[in-house]
Image (cartoon, rainbow over all chains, first blue to last red; front, side):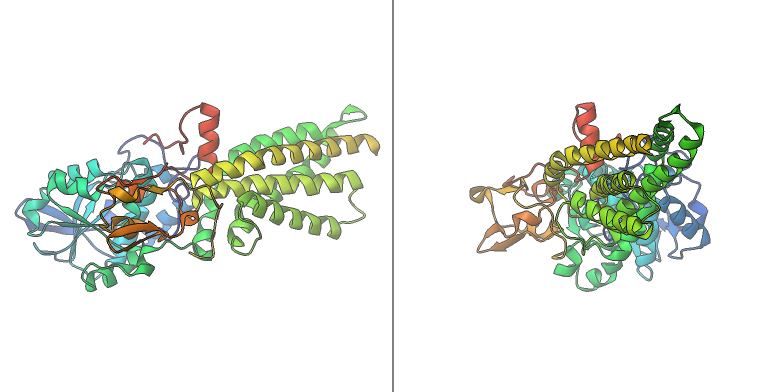
Length: 376
Length: 93
């Protein structure tokens, strides 16, 4: 089952500057987390199968917290293959999931009390939704794991329960042709797995829809920020250099003083775009994320100018207003990758319109700000 | 998810009526419920809610659905423009 309620492509999976997914290196530290969930083994006609328990311990929580901040996210994996939960027999359902440990943890937690088989695909430590988009949570991999685990000898039935958000990568009819198992798409959220199974493997319309509540948007914001640290760092260096430019050609004192306030504006813009906008997403006007983000940044900047009015000179005040709007707009636009409702065609259309405006605002802000230094 | 709507008039999803057998897989896999099957045929009820994930086309046994699938992610599209290749999140997968 998928671990995220929302979590569009990118957000839940990566760690480095590129917002989507993790790195490519295989199986580094695959076994590192095993002792947090292993619970003996069960014997099957196809040999012993490792058993897992449903408890989420301190190390699991710490691990989740770390990857939410983008630390070691591309190495947070469990070994692919078949696992047993509870005391499954030949009639027990087979739940298929990804080998991102956060995903796996949520599945074993939400499936607590069930006797089930869990078939973990090798998605290179990426969550179901992203991996399905990439094709690693895909038809071939399902067939390969079913065959490798000799699932046909372990269970009497021929059904696999896949998370619905795995569907972009899996062709159900091809899986059936390839290994004889038919695919039943389960609910979007693993927390509905009990109701789904009790209803005879039927998902209600609510279980089939993705939603994107405030909590889901909020947990994605730390990784948005950590992903921006590197470009933000370079921008800060550039701002400090620009800040020194003035009537005296270059002044270290001005570089420090004016640079500091410029970097504060940059940081405020990033917070407006990466935290305020995602949290206030449904209430900010407009459809385009760049508009929502620009609005959030602009309003916050206007508040800052009013609060500090008198202390900020007019050109600097305008520069602050424009720069924060532009930065917040750009950063907010990047949040499209974390949402479960933005289409690539839509994002492309938005970007073609928004990028020139954002660039224009930034240049204007820069001119006002550097020019302002000469007017003092 | 009625509260969240994105850009209108851009989604590339299309349904070829003649090829549809009304099996209902599209209705089952769509995370935004844009399809409904009635009288043996699927229909697109709300094209503008489509996020182009491609699940419907992937699971249509008669290939009646076409969509240009991808990730609705600004950074991925920017990467694609800069590198001159298909939009990618940089997953290498």
